[in-house]
Image 1 (cartoon, helix red, strand yellow):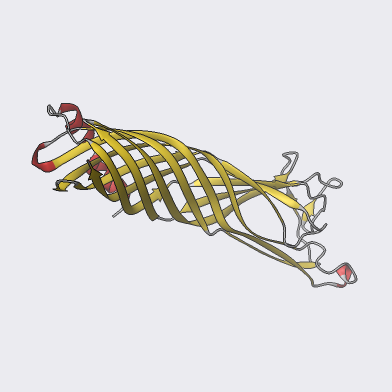
Image 2: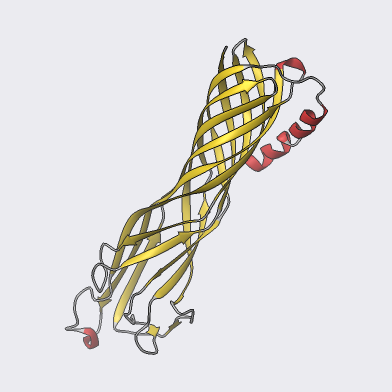
Amino acid sequence: MRIGILLRIFAGLPVVALFSQVQAQQVGWYLGAGVGMNDTGAFNQAGFNDDTLCYPAFVCDGAPAGYRWFYDLEPDSGMALEFSAGRAWNDWRAEVALARLDNGIDQRFTGIEFLNGNPVRFIEQDDYRISTRASAGNLLIHSLAFNIYRDFAAAGGWTPYLGAGIGAARAELTELYFEERYTCISEACQGRPRGEFDSLQLADLSDTVHTAQIFAGADYDIADELKLGLKLAWRHVDEFSAVYSYLEHAPPSKSNTNSFGNTSHWSLIVELKRFFE
């Protein structure tokens, strides 16, 4: 079941909270752990380098200053984990939480231009056979956040709540892969340096950025000191960027910079809390 369907189930939680007439009275320290699923919205990738080569099939007016490229990234549904330690007093809770989100990524090339913003124009050529492969692995988000919750008592042992928090996140896109090979297939390019235009990169790109989140959920009392519940969370993670060197490139040791747009994450987690007086 997609999280979008589950959102409708939890849409009534704020209403229950607002109209609840009895406040929750749980007091004490607690530890929490949860596991669930998360959906991440599509985002974009933009990269650039200062490569001065004019590649076969490109129309160049002199040596370029560099290139800029663009991809759309579509995440798959993935796993969400969360661990927390906090303090409850009456109808409020404050906690420090560690979260991990993991989504596989489908990458789709959308365009390339020169570094000055001019579009790259292509011509047909019969000197080289060109093969290009690009892919991405997983989007990993590891966050440390400070969260505040407002609990509302309800009948039947259920305690709905609302919350919000801010923190820092380590955002990483793993196994970012790019390979382009030029194979000479005519006499015109015979004798030129082998691999003159080839590129190869395989990198895990990461950065530390800000994150913010809001929550809605409900806990059920399964024992005097144990609560089991469902938590719906929305997280915003700021855009991140990283610089990495090519494994192969001409000229050697060139690097490039890739930036990844803001991401939004919906997660639904089954969470167990253990309270201590």
